[in-house]
Image 1 (spheres, rainbow, N blue to C red):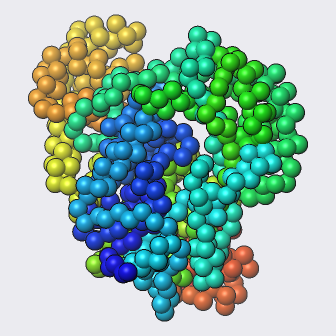
Image 2 (tube, helix red, strand yellow):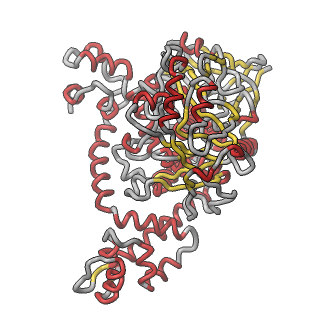
Length: 624
């Protein structure tokens, strides 16, 4: 039996769901093919979204018109804005979600998206003709034809799980792996390799003594992920808990190292350096007496807890015995042990910035198969792949984001330009323009783009314009208002700041580190009146104005730097050189430029091993 679509999306994880929604919401007749409709949007590892830099990605997804932020807010059981003690470029939202409700909300969203169908099955083959993908064949023998195909198979491609010496084929616990696709894609000239990741033990809350642990509550304010105007807390808010390993824990763990797949040669693939297993921690940081553990609830109606910080592939008995040496876990019962999983990925330097493969036309890759890890990185790629798959069907220039426009732009540029030598995770340190890429202003950066694409709705766009209007009015008011010396000094005295000797501008008070906008609003009646004119999202708009006022100098300086470097991004070089014949380039430069075939001089300059002198040679050859 045959079915015809504009876009086929393979895989119902975080990348696939965003891709399918984006393509369908932009107008493409789309089908999402997933192994299990009851596991759509499954949180395979921790029941949380966001975190350092990852939270910025989720806000960008939302600003463009994606779904992850909305679904996380609707299912959040704890919200925290991390790094509040640092500057706003480092503030990162993070939420614990109810795992079951997260799946339910994703399923409801997908099932109610116009032009989007869902098919429960496994894709076993791509239909390729003259170097183009034109459809897929499933295990049931159903043939789907389409103008664009997006592969988002996550950890399922030839997935293999490890618990001690036990090996279990599968893409996730109790779920089968996907076979044959890697072999077919490899035969078409796309390079593949293996990566490894892991997940911790899940434990029963009824067997935990929380009195021996430190409670970690969430925030109770206006912050959330989505920029849409609705209440931020819909579910009961739960606490996380903190405990620590100890010398006895480490002793038990060491006794199992000879049976650890990570140390006995059973696992040889690349693992994440920044999120090591507990057995890796005790070997790499042997001098450490303890390691922090976070107990994260799985849902409002669940006794299941996720033990963050205890990722492991050690034998079951070693994991359980080690856990019972931890304060509060002496009588712990577990639902299942932690495990490691190996899976196939494809070298992302074989992709364009649109995430279309260079070797097979109309075929897009998104998510962990591009060498990334994390729900947020996958969802960001899925959104971009979905947008470009739609454009690929209906015409138009590919949609890409610059490194100065979004963390998603940094992510994709890093993958396509630099490739990966370990599972890629986003950090704020990867973004050279992080003052411009703050979580508070993702809507200002990206919603207009999403609206022009037809992805962000008119309602979302109207909310942006309203926010911008009242934010700018507030900024103008603070910059233009004068305050008398006596009135200013009464506030300065309260906060222990040096007094002034004459009247000043309100902005000069706000620029003092000891002063914030809330203090000014409470102290100056005319400012309070101005703030009360804001009809909606008052706290969010005040925060946005305050950040721009306090950090204007830093923001403008970074904009200037970005604009200067943007000139290199505008110099197109794709198809202009046969790099193998340019003898003046270094051997490494010739090889890497030929392999990656960068679009611009700017991208070429970011390829590892390309020196400034190599770039100068290219500029000379271009007549620059």
